[in-house]
Image (cartoon, rainbow, N blue to C red; front, side, top):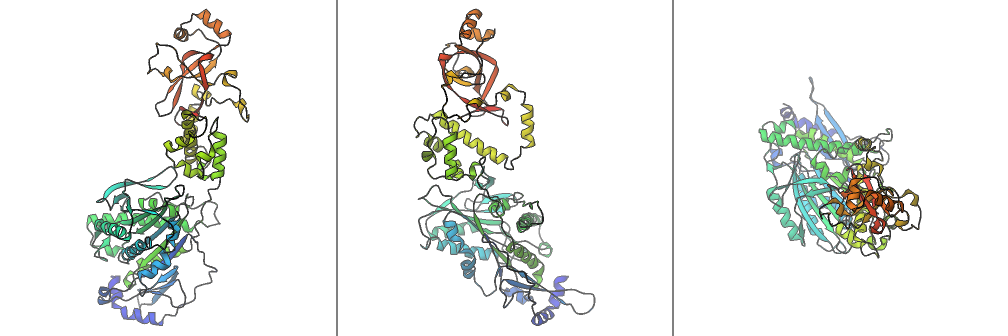
Length: 606
């Protein structure tokens, strides 16, 4: 076995290392780094039991050249003494065995705190082989953060909310709620939400430390060949920082991620079936994480017009870390990566793999796809662009932009609840409840359509729906808005411009109509000013055919199709087969309906 071979030649391994003279790395020019991601590597000390078993160190921070790790391994040959293979990796700042957790926190993590405090996203994740010191490092950093958040060095008042959970395969468990399962979902803005996980408000360092200690009791661990207390899941501490004085600002979020350790084949030789399943799930999620890192590193590949695919939706872990890997993310984020490695010459294979990805991340230029202003995507609008939309598109009378959106961006206004949105609209003079509801629905339909069709191309499914509905009566009346009025600032009263296709609200005087009848919706679509010999329409008004024709010829009554409620909330259907005659004096107002081919229903708009 390779392990026995290495232990037999430990003295030669050390002798060759003492003779090793590092060669300067080839000229790489200025290092390609990004302010959005910082990479560091921690080499833990050799443990007493490793020393007692004859193991020797093989990973060293290079003296005289910062940010470089030299890794040495003996190569097995058929004849002669085994030679030494040495490789070097440039992996950001290197913390050797003599560096403590406090120095790692000060150099790597502490700069993220002001960033999160001001409403942005910060992430620390530690990865590496099982037994390499990830949990030890993250636990120490969590305690240092708990002290820094309440020591008064950060300016301003904030409210802090904490949730701590673990991910096992594609399952998520709340460690602050006796491992209750919950879901990782994506909202309409593309943000990851913890649906069902409890948040706990903390007001002091002891409160936060108590929650950290409580979560550790429920963390799933097990004994492995490399570590008696190996973490069998990914643990994530999420700290949300809310600014109570500025409700329009986004909350800051800090993710502290302790990844489960990867295991080599020799580490799982004696695993049970359950342990093998755990290992397989861990390695799959870590493999997807590595694919995301690889895709991120290739984002700046200018030789190909096709952007690399980053599969962050393929595992629960990378869904939570979506903000790190998604180049079109809505929020600015900064990430610190701590690659943890063991020094032993028995672990050079796993160590080389860890260092390779650390080097890849360090050279990754995190290019963010700009989500600049797009008139069809409300989440890209700043306050000025949003106010302009409100002024033009909110109907007549228009909703006051300064009341509805005094300082919000498009995305922030979308986050208002419907009741808050409508309440603000009603503060504008002359705006009715129906108009406020219609404008809210119109604004949200624009947002949903922009999410469905972010590429700017009509999907095949939508084309099929449009084709199927092309010849339907509803499609012919896709909008009741009069195209002749486009661009006009003054609009005549609707009774002076009644036309086929107009939708009106009207008063139904017939006592024979029950309250549950669709006619009680009091909406109708104008067809023509001439009554056909429709027995249903004549019977409804109580006119004989000749009298009805005489009235229609005077232009006082119109044959209309009834409009009833759809199966979905705030939707309507045009019933072309059920017609009524409406007197002009009973018409109250024009109502604008728009047809949605996806749902096959009409919606009131403004």
